[in-house]
View 1 (cartoon, helix red, strand yellow):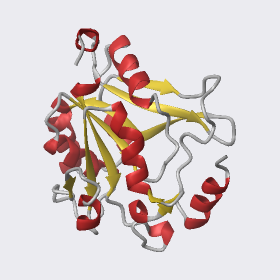
View 2 (view 1 turned 90 degrees about the vertical axis):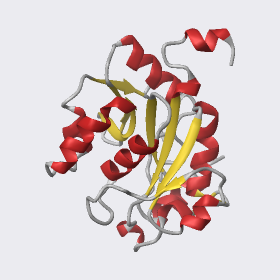
View 3 (view 1 turned 135 degrees about the vertical axis):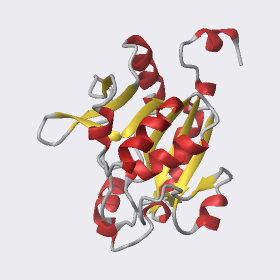
Length: 215
């Protein structure tokens, strides 16, 4: 690691990325989203290849097909939260925070395959610049509104205790938890940003539609 990296407030090696692939895939007919092919590669593996250069470590949060996920060559952790089966993204946040060995954790979903290649750099810059506790990505949606994408979240691992308290008291919504902390919203609607960057494929039809839009 070069000295320049070490001087940055949030260098790559300080961040672990967790790929959230633990959902039940209800809108995909119960299919395991992370195992659906995108451009000939399982979504979770595609996400892993896109995320790996941006962070120091990567892990996958999955609740089925664990051997298949392990074949991608990174640690795989099922939900360990006691929140019930398929408890949503916050269960993945908790699992990531419990297993993370770096000072920071970044969460990305497995169903948004074109997320920016500079996602982590811009989120880390904003977190440091605003002296915030949490950074959340935001993207312009079809109606023209800039909206937070709370499953793309960068946080220090010390927030584990806060998230445990929140979920143990019945909280399940990411934005209700992030609202408890100083949060910076990071817009990804600059010139040159791909409008499809935060398009998430909830159904197989949407996934094929996104595939068809590739050059």
